[in-house]
Length: 224
Image (cartoon, rainbow, N blue to C red):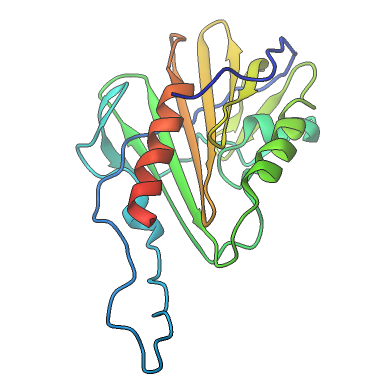
């Protein structure tokens, strides 16, 4: 299980996030197929399907079994101040490495106020996991004060960064809060995949550290 994080910060941010939570992935392992090519060279690596790595309809999560839905207009597209973008955005999050070859995302519902969302980016060139997590840790920590998120539905009430940290298996987690709403975020990085998670609810306590590490391990098995 992931080890404790490197830092716990109570910072101030102003923005409300309505983002969704992460879920476990279904799908088959994705492995190279076919016999060696003439001359004994290694066969080409099979393409990774980003869509197959997302949670699927009915998968179990800490919030319950999911019902897939689009990532809706309640998700932020911009943030004030801009230095809080890494801490508050799910769609178009700047914590995701550039250079992806494939992208997929989905929102999920649970029959109550809780929201969960997940995105997967696939890369042709291997990511430097430690460097990505370290850089994003620094980016999230820049959110000082109130953060205000703006979505297609309008401007939301401010939120604050209450916690952020990393684990030893390539996972970054952080929490944005206000009195009536809490959003937990996770970023899990593998050599060819970056997984972004967001879970929001009226009550705090979503186990994002353990959940993001579990999802990372699931994807690792499917892309090995």
